[in-house]
Length: 144
Image: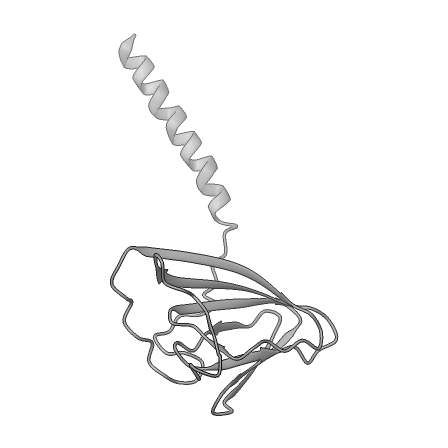
């Protein structure tokens, strides 16, 4: 009896695994970005020492809006969901993003973004920092 029960469990497990594996055929994985270099061609810095902290932001920038000059002291990357965005560094290096584009952002480099389009730009950004470290520093007269 125990042998038949064990055989039944094995057969049911096999059927269940096959049913689940059949669904795996529909999974599609696409690499959107993978690099150790930011969009301006600079090598990304080493990760800082400390307790890791990941931040994920959804940022919506209205049509015609211009962000303040700022920099990110942490590695970050994003995916444009909608609209368009132009990113400009203080050295006038320029990147134009549109919906579907990914970005590996510049680190510790002053830049700003502006939405020159006619609809809201929406981007998801992933920041890899450490606890108690800011992910964005805005420029003031004293630090730029």
